[in-house]
Length: 88
Image (tube, rainbow, N blue to C red; front, side, top):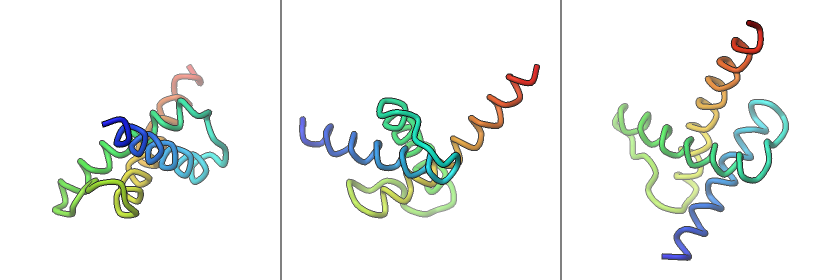
């Protein structure tokens, strides 16, 4: 149980960090990177499942890809909302 939490946290950290690098060119901090990676894994898994592809299947390269994809989508939405709110 403890090792799976550690592995999923590492996967979330990697996914969040890579997504932040793709979208904004910098990390947001360890806690936010992990959170973004986990939310990205959930969102990516949902998107991939909706189109008939396997989502997150474990701690592997495919799951990292799905998590990064979802985190990038989430970050793009997050930045769009945040920039719209800051303009008003």
